[in-house]
Image 1 (cartoon, rainbow, N blue to C red):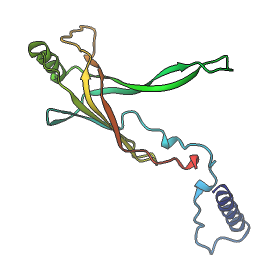
Image 2 (image 1 turned 90 degrees about the horizontal axis):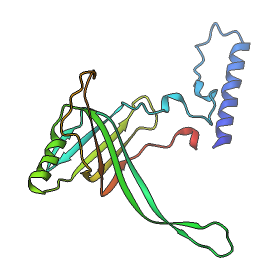
Image 3 (image 1 turned 180 degrees about the vertical axis):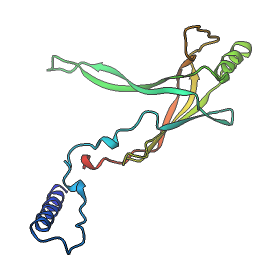
Image 4 (image 1 turned 45 degrees about the vertical axis):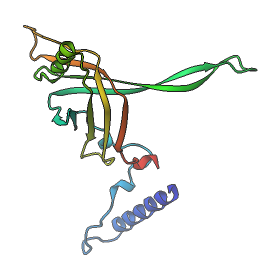
Length: 194
């Protein structure tokens, strides 16, 4: 692969030099892919994913909502590990024994759906689970899009009421756990990685 790129760069360089050395008034403009002159072992800036380019959806009791008021969301998988003593070593090894899933979101204080979940739990003891679908898609990037689905999210708690005379706008936030996750769409491999 690297030899192929070097060969293409050499060919492009030779064509450019030939074009510049000869009288080029009678010729059509030389078509060059200038990416051959760019460093092939670095990421292009356009491939950084813009943080606001994407969407999130919440599916709760069969109803799907666009999470339009979302400011930021983060979901994590943390592996649980056990330290394993090993004869002949001064350090212990680490063996994965499970995983825990948690997340948080900050959003504009203009939806009551999460407070309704908390109120329902307070009034009836019924705990509601929901799914969150997150899609990152920056169309200027060559890596395409990634979609992650957080399955059976459950609130840790949340704001019940909020006022702030100094605030330009009110924010809400939740912390949650989830039981599973899937990634039906994933980013493609950057050219510089190959």
